Structures are given as C-alpha cells and as structure tokens.
Image 1 (spheres, rainbow, N blue to C red):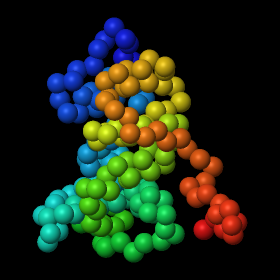
Image 2 (image 1 turned 120 degrees about the horizontal axis):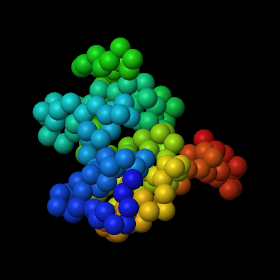
Image 3 (image 1 turned 180 degrees about the vertical axis):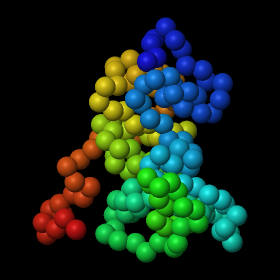
Image 4 (image 1 turned 90 degrees about the horizontal axis):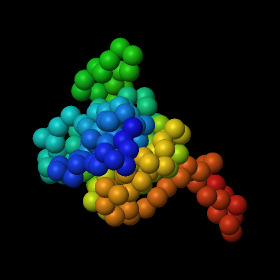
Length: 168
C-alpha cells in the first residue's frame, strides 16, 4: 500500500493508475482498455463510419454491466469479433461512444463490489473496496484532482416513483 511518505507521481495523465498498481485494492478506470477485466473489450475505432464509436466485444459480465448501465432488461448484440478465453468467452459485440466511458466505469465498479466510487472532473473513475485504508482515500484525494461526484452502492438501481409507487 502507498503511505503518506510515498508521494504519487503526477508525471503522466494516468498517475492514479500507478497508485492502483502499487498493491492497493483501489481500482482506476480512465480509458476503455481499463474495462477489459470487467468484460468490455474495446477493439477498434475504425469500424464506425463516423469515427465516433468504438467496436467492443463483451463477455457475459460485460453484457450484464451494459444492461445495468443503460437500465434496460435485454439487448440484442451483434456476433463477437473475437473468441475471448475459454473461461470467459466473448458473447457479442456493440459500438460504444467514448462519452459512455464514465457511465460504464461506474457500473463496472458497482458490479465489482466497490463500496464507494469517485468521479474526477479530469476523467478517471476510482473504485474503493472493503480493505482500502483511510490513507488510500487520502492519497487518491490529494493526487486525483477535483472530485466531480461520489457514488455509493444502493439496494436497487432504481428509486420508487413517489406518485405511482412504480419501480420499473
């Protein structure tokens, strides 16, 4: 774990990724390749005729995260471009805009069991887990930049509509 006597480096735009790799449980998502462990595998930007979306393969977990993030019960995916691994095969593909990265990061970390998620105005989304120390929080807060929003898991993804009592 990082200690207060081991300052983080701000030399690269992904300096928080360096912190996460030092042994803490803290997870950082700041670009599409960071979603691979969560089942969303960015393949190429060349597939989109508008050069706006990224072609992604998804595993069953990636599909579950995508559904939860979009708040929908089902989605039809195109066939996957790659096989994935025998333990975690790719089950489909879709095109995702770069603008969806923050939202997907939040729901990937929620799916992963993060107990608190910080969204920074300069891009990174950070997940804290049981076992992270006060010093882990302090280090990320000191070196992360301006925190745009903090999110904690809820019992359900939807609030009850007060007038109708409806959840879905």
